[in-house]
Length: 289
Image (cartoon, rainbow, N blue to C red; front, side, top):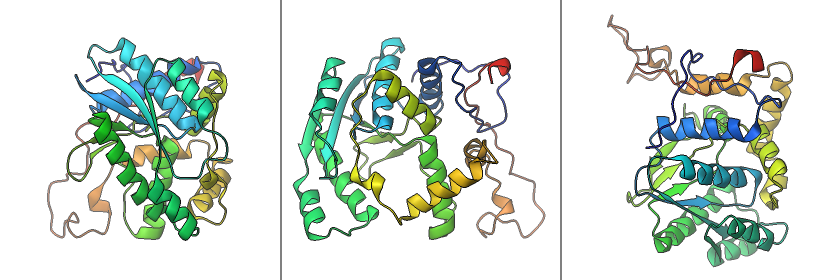
């Protein structure tokens, strides 16, 4: 496990201060990624980490952060990158391959033919179907690469959007797990950007000169994801810490204040609502906030 020390005086659970442009961008990103990797034991000695590289700002930030942490970590682990092409890139992918290899990282690129047929035969397929096809292709590729850990570029924004989407449209109180396992337990799936918001990844990718390759999915309109992003955009004009508050909520669950009979005490019992280990995020000096 990476050993990134936690600062004393952490604020309440789930708090991640918004990015302050006066702070060093790389330091902020590495601190937040290091905190996530440490708290959730994402990377361990001897791990072979394969980074899912989509060509977007988030995957560029994730790859750079893990490479930097690899140099500083007291453990040995390897990092490589892979790209699954499902026919949705809006520009050539070769520049991002050149960028990755220039960093001294092995990059594996593969066109997924089943996904290509899906796009051709069922152009109106939904995100869930596309995700299943991608997951199969990712596992197949990482099996060939000899990886045991797959790093995914979901950000704090994705966690918050998943939380709201599940509550509003699937009837579940759930988001994304920062660490989970593939069904056959072949791969540990990690999301090191859980504490990193997209304003940070956008700034990081821009500052690094990364050749971001847009995906056609990002331009779809009328989707649930677009609707939720618009809700956040509207609310954050008056409530700029909304995502930080939602991260806090995900780390501060009070089961007896919900409707699930598995956790709702119908008779007097000792309270079990107080978390035993609150979730500290990244501490930055108060005067810099």
